[in-house]
Length: 103
Ligand SMILES: [Cu+2]
Image (tube, rainbow, N blue to C red):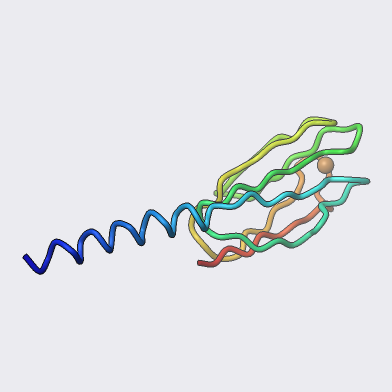
Protein backbone atom coordinates (compact mmCIF):
# COMPACT_ATOMS: atom_id res chain seq x y z
CA UNK A 1 0.00 0.00 0.00
CA UNK A 2 2.90 2.38 0.51
CA UNK A 3 3.97 2.44 -3.17
CA UNK A 4 0.71 3.91 -4.52
CA UNK A 5 0.87 7.41 -2.98
CA UNK A 6 4.47 7.78 -4.20
CA UNK A 7 3.52 6.92 -7.78
CA UNK A 8 0.66 9.42 -7.77
CA UNK A 9 2.96 12.11 -6.46
CA UNK A 10 5.59 11.41 -9.12
CA UNK A 11 3.03 11.56 -11.94
CA UNK A 12 1.61 14.82 -10.63
CA UNK A 13 5.01 16.42 -10.42
CA UNK A 14 5.98 15.40 -13.92
CA UNK A 15 2.78 16.76 -15.44
CA UNK A 16 3.16 20.07 -13.61
CA UNK A 17 6.82 20.28 -14.64
CA UNK A 18 6.04 19.77 -18.32
CA UNK A 19 3.29 22.38 -18.42
CA UNK A 20 5.31 24.97 -16.54
CA UNK A 21 8.51 24.62 -18.57
CA UNK A 22 7.14 24.79 -22.14
CA UNK A 23 7.52 28.38 -23.26
CA UNK A 24 7.54 30.27 -26.52
CA UNK A 25 10.55 32.45 -27.16
CA UNK A 26 10.33 35.10 -29.85
CA UNK A 27 13.21 36.28 -31.97
CA UNK A 28 12.65 39.16 -34.36
CA UNK A 29 14.53 39.34 -37.65
CA UNK A 30 15.05 42.90 -38.76
CA UNK A 31 17.62 44.52 -41.02
CA UNK A 32 19.51 41.24 -41.47
CA UNK A 33 19.85 40.62 -37.75
CA UNK A 34 18.42 38.16 -35.27
CA UNK A 35 17.18 40.15 -32.28
CA UNK A 36 18.08 39.18 -29.66
CA UNK A 37 21.03 37.33 -31.12
CA UNK A 38 21.20 35.06 -28.09
CA UNK A 39 18.30 33.49 -26.21
CA UNK A 40 18.07 30.87 -23.53
CA UNK A 41 15.56 28.02 -23.71
CA UNK A 42 14.66 24.68 -22.18
CA UNK A 43 14.05 21.44 -24.06
CA UNK A 44 10.42 21.47 -25.27
CA UNK A 45 10.31 25.24 -25.69
CA UNK A 46 9.32 26.72 -29.03
CA UNK A 47 11.43 29.33 -30.75
CA UNK A 48 9.45 31.61 -33.06
CA UNK A 49 11.25 33.82 -35.55
CA UNK A 50 9.30 36.81 -36.87
CA UNK A 51 10.72 38.14 -40.08
CA UNK A 52 10.14 41.88 -40.50
CA UNK A 53 12.40 42.13 -43.52
CA UNK A 54 11.25 42.21 -47.15
CA UNK A 55 13.44 39.20 -47.97
CA UNK A 56 13.32 35.56 -46.90
CA UNK A 57 15.62 34.24 -44.20
CA UNK A 58 16.35 30.91 -42.59
CA UNK A 59 17.34 29.82 -39.13
CA UNK A 60 19.68 26.92 -39.78
CA UNK A 61 21.61 24.87 -37.29
CA UNK A 62 23.46 21.95 -38.85
CA UNK A 63 22.05 18.63 -37.67
CA UNK A 64 19.34 20.29 -35.59
CA UNK A 65 16.92 22.49 -37.49
CA UNK A 66 16.49 24.34 -40.77
CA UNK A 67 13.56 26.74 -40.70
CA UNK A 68 12.65 28.94 -43.66
CA UNK A 69 11.13 32.23 -42.57
CA UNK A 70 9.55 33.99 -45.56
CA UNK A 71 9.50 37.79 -45.79
CA UNK A 72 6.93 39.21 -43.40
CA UNK A 73 6.09 35.79 -41.98
CA UNK A 74 7.22 33.65 -39.09
CA UNK A 75 8.69 30.22 -38.58
CA UNK A 76 9.25 28.07 -35.54
CA UNK A 77 11.00 25.03 -34.16
CA UNK A 78 10.71 23.05 -30.94
CA UNK A 79 13.96 22.74 -29.02
CA UNK A 80 15.26 19.26 -28.34
CA UNK A 81 18.27 18.22 -26.33
CA UNK A 82 20.50 20.73 -24.60
CA UNK A 83 23.70 22.64 -25.09
CA UNK A 84 24.38 25.63 -27.27
CA UNK A 85 22.81 25.69 -30.74
CA UNK A 86 24.48 28.16 -33.02
CA UNK A 87 22.47 28.99 -36.10
CA UNK A 88 22.73 31.19 -39.14
CA UNK A 89 20.81 32.22 -42.23
CA UNK A 90 21.58 30.16 -45.32
CA UNK A 91 20.95 33.16 -47.60
CA UNK A 92 22.99 35.61 -45.54
CA UNK A 93 25.67 33.56 -43.72
CA UNK A 94 26.84 36.51 -41.65
CA UNK A 95 23.46 36.55 -39.88
CA UNK A 96 24.10 34.55 -36.73
CA UNK A 97 22.19 33.62 -33.62
CA UNK A 98 22.54 31.37 -30.65
CA UNK A 99 20.19 29.36 -28.45
CA UNK A 100 21.50 28.25 -25.09
CA UNK A 101 19.51 25.23 -23.98
CA UNK A 102 19.56 24.00 -20.42
CA UNK A 103 17.10 22.34 -18.06
CU1 LIG B 1 18.86 35.98 -44.24
